[in-house]
Image 1 (cartoon, rainbow, N blue to C red):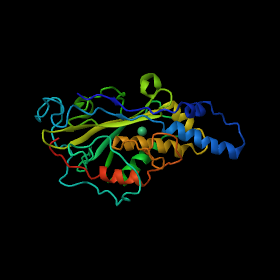
Image 2 (image 1 turned 60 degrees about the vertical axis):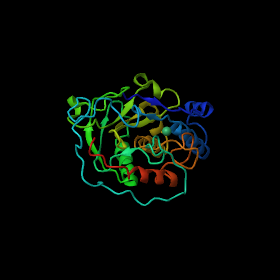
Image 3 (image 1 turned 135 degrees about the vertical axis):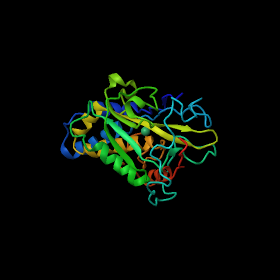
Image 4 (image 1 turned 180 degrees about the horizontal axis):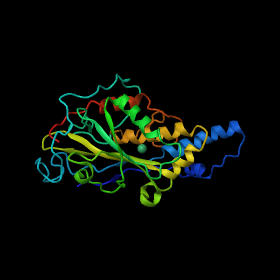
Length: 293
Ligand SMILES: [Zn+2]
């Protein structure tokens, strides 16, 4: 069964303290610089939650292969014959990237099915003031750099959970549950404590002998930290960077040790996907179509 797999929180305690203790007092120029440093630190010290790398690479959702199974939707819901979009040409070899999971060949990334839309819902509870456009803007960016087509299915009252049910017919109908984006309070998501501003990941499923395909995922954003970040000068860019980073995880990117990439897990002044990120994202947009799921 799927389970939340916590990757490293990768915290840098001193930097986090810096952010936590930061107050808007110093002279403007200095403040700005320090401010960015602090914000970037808080931001990109994020944990990866790969939402459950499920079982093995062959018999996922054990016993759930038949279409009529109560554990999975009718296969191929929403699936077209061809990819709905095309990943843009990305720089090759110009930066580091990594994947959260790869297929049995050890090379090909696990990705969403490009022949069907990636549906997502947002739970609006706790949303910070000024955050309305954050998620749709970041989703649009991820769509542009992967070619994956995202469809917003509206708001939800589904709370984050571990493990989350991949198939919730009562709530979402006969299809895989949509990607769930939530603004969490630390009290309901202990994984967001301290230095963690966001979590993101998706769950792969596969048929026997077929590729693993992400069918749904979650992005959890720390409502309190975003509120603080958005209140700072330039905070919108930082907030957007966090959401992009988490969505990067959600579509399959892992962390890299190259600090010039947005998927670097720690302090950074990178606020958008860089060359390596873009190469990885383009590959993630070119996954296998799997109408059998
Ligand atoms: Zn991360």
